[in-house]
Amino acid sequence: MNEERKKSLQSLKTARGQIDGIVKMIEDERYCMDISNQIVASQALLKRANLLILKQHLNHCVTQACLNGGSEEKIDEIMAILEKAMSK
Amino acid sequence: MNEERKKSLQSLKTARGQIDGIVKMIEDERYCMDISNQIVASQALLKRANLLILKQHLNHCVTQACLNGGSEEKIDEIMAILEKAMSK
Amino acid sequence: MNEERKKSLQSLKTARGQIDGIVKMIEDERYCMDISNQIVASQALLKRANLLILKQHLNHCVTQACLNGGSEEKIDEIMAILEKAMSK
Amino acid sequence: MNEERKKSLQSLKTARGQIDGIVKMIEDERYCMDISNQIVASQALLKRANLLILKQHLNHCVTQACLNGGSEEKIDEIMAILEKAMSK
Image (cartoon, rainbow over all chains, first blue to last red; front, top):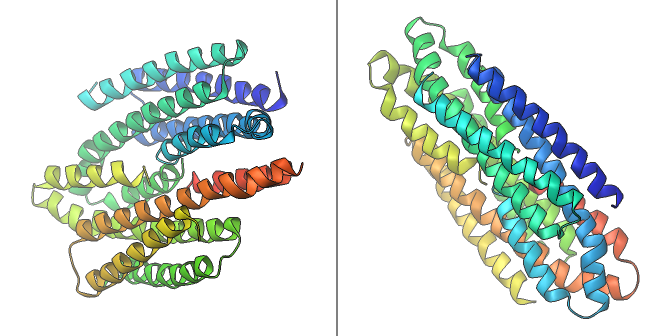
């Protein structure tokens, strides 16, 4: 597993732990703004996890496709993700 | 627990299940773009969970504070969250 | 005009000036990443302009509606904007 | 000028026209939520303009750099933009 995937995995596991905590906060009827702040923090972790996956994708898969003359399809695929990711 | 909090809780639990799946996808060395797509889907769930919390906060806490003449502090608090939430 | 609207207006005018510059950059065939960076800077200005409008809306219109017992419709209206604004 | 740059230019010019309208809306003391909706529409246009610039950058500059063995620097540059763009 490359370095970016390792770091992405770590961010995802931290996010999962945070979400466990947020579920408990709601069950415990905690204050809305504290819950909201924790959700925003988890969103930041997912965003980071995604950027790391995209980075290693560009560095490995796209570079490889490019050398083999098939980068156009890969780029369309990335653009579709970016359009969605910029809306989250 | 009010309706919005129940729905928010449901979104968070679904997101947690998805993240479990994404962790497994990375461990199984799955294709980058499939992983990225799933992360984006989880981000959408967290965003929805947060909007629901914000909605019931406005409907209950802010409305209450407003009637008691103390809404300014509540609004500053919401604006701080919105500023962060719009960046995630 | 209240203070937030004045600041929002200023941000919008600055963004408009920046976009003039970006149009010229594209016409002059400037480097993609320099163009992209400037677009992102303009997006930040629009986001700031929007947060300022939302803030004074909460402080004035929503607080007023709340005292008059009609805040629910106002809150639905804000939630619809937030949902869109968090996707931009 | 390539097709994506032409479309990006068009989006930017439309956004500029919209911002002219929003400036006038604020000067005319129009309703907050109408202003906010228009700002969000302009943000969508800037986002689209940016995605088009990124797309042609990947298709042209990055593909070229990749064939010449210098894609790593280009990818770092794109990642820096994406990180910022996903926060706007």
